[in-house]
Image (cartoon, rainbow, N blue to C red):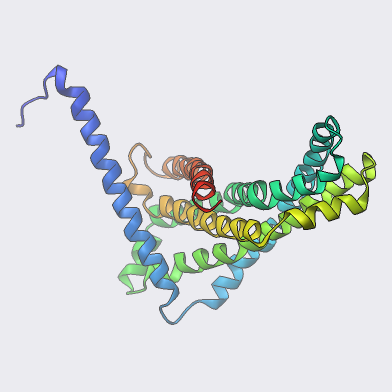
Length: 269
């Protein structure tokens, strides 16, 4: 039998064990992402499943995106008006609302909403299929689980999230218009003129890049956590493991979105 670790060395042993687990998990997730991307180009591709996922991830999220964007835009309109009014710069309200939504709030809040609604469901679905051995059954029948299950979800998310972000931006700008122009009396012409003069192609491109990166992060983490539910430390067994891993996936996805938002802004701004 191996000798027991001395008491003074146990913290270092636990730290080393944690580092090894994290490196193993990162490598496992990296291979998972590569296999999922590769599955997009393998034939036959499941176009029916792709349409189903587009309906669930994209069309099913429009309502929550609409109300989140409208409320966010109206709040930005009100707060922006009171801040700019102190300096007599109410005409810049359209610029402030549009830039904030296009570059920051649009991609971030869209990714967070889709993560909470579709990402959690995606993780739970794949996790249940794993613990009920449905994925193992696919492998026994020589069916690639990545091409069959993961790749349609990946492609649907990469298509849906940027489109939902665009909807979020438009609705949010309209919300700012309602709050600033209709409620607070800002000139309609100055609102749209300030927006058109301030927003550049670079700002729009930055928002699009962020939406694609956030989409990749959320589908990678949420589906990957479900796929490896039995290998995640502390997840437990059975239904308990799926619930814990789903919570972990949503938290990790949300944190990753915020971290990569800063990195992309620092690199591309």
